[in-house]
Length: 266
Image 1: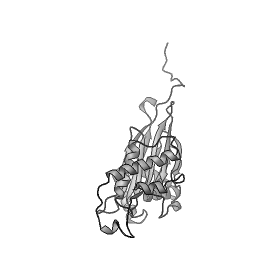
Image 2: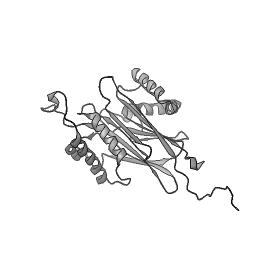
Image 3: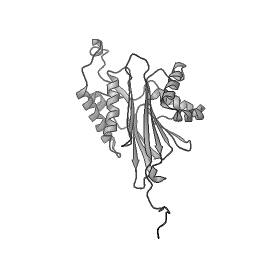
Image 4: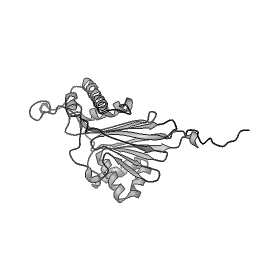
């Protein structure tokens, strides 16, 4: 005789994820200098914020996030593994970079700009044999992850308070020799944590991250409204907040990942 009782030892189905990317340039003239990429199928997500003082920074930011989503570092990467991964991305980027355009003073003399620079945040979703999910993230600089659980608990990485942001975050150089010289064990920060259906993961470049962390301190209900907002409404709201000074005048990028119950778990 069979019954419909669920076997308590049966592994649960891993949660499904969906992602959306919102990008808002700081003006209508210059290309947006942030990068963002997502693979729902592979559970890989990344954002990067190009530093305006660099050269062709939008191309370097995009190279970083695309490389991570295509083939991230190993889940158990050592410091040496991470260094080699970033170096490989920089070498590939340097080999395919188109000739620079712009005034000659950028290329020579005391004020020469020889590299692009960017902050970086990459996140992977990993699942064990029982269907339990975890996130693992690496970061350089002040692009941030905010995890809001179904119960409303907030976790942030690598910064967790608005006052921690500065004008001089750590940056990833796009020029391989500069990257090799600057990359040490302290540069790449790591974190991991459990994640479950009902949770939301927010990957944000610095201006958006600082605004979201401010909301978390002073208007938690507002943060939850942001999470639920349709993309076009959120775009308009962010533009208005930037116009009134609540959000810094900068390119704005927010990658939202939502975790939902798999149909097999219902």
